[in-house]
Image (cartoon, rainbow, N blue to C red; front, side, top):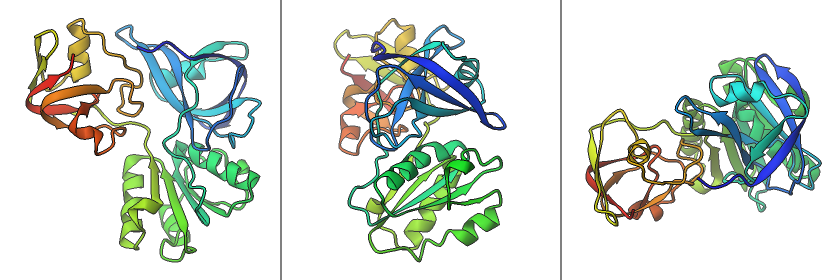
Length: 299
């Protein structure tokens, strides 16, 4: 696994909504693209492996005095994050983004559900900083960050949400950005395509993919000659690690690209949210993806 790239100190924490804690980190910071996230080392998992969680930065990204993240209480890494107190030191990666605003867009339509508001807030703040046209639609039971979104359409009602969000009446040159639970994002993007939005103007930020299960398959390691059997309830990454094969990994959710491995033969079944279509013919993300039959890895 790659070494952590930064050590940051918790400046303060505060409750933003029921179960949502805001955390500010200070230290050696750099500017970042709106919609970026950082990977945070959140202790270890039940097997003693380093646990990396990704959290969206909520600032505008321009010369930040701190990194602000918002963490919804759940299990594992988020519980570890909720126990942080001022003065604690955390290990992080540097900001990365696959959800940047399009600079040439004439209007930014920003849509969020639940904790998906975090990268959307970053987009909104950047739009305010640079005086760009933007509009926010946000559905949430607790409406974390509502006070940071003046003029936003905020509701806890699905009916009211869709009444306010008119995907058929948007300025020419508008781009749509959406983040939240996968079913919510699927519905928004499907409705947008049905309303005539080109795919190139629809942008989604995913929190991660679930490791795929399915029929067992075989992984053959070309360089060492080793053959591994991957059962249906284990990931390829688990099988490689159990066999003592050193594969760099971080998020274990198919998002960061750290574990991407070259393949030289076979029929992969991709379930990641990282690889491009061109990369899918030559690479696999072993933390979430599977294969049919035998897959040959360049290991």
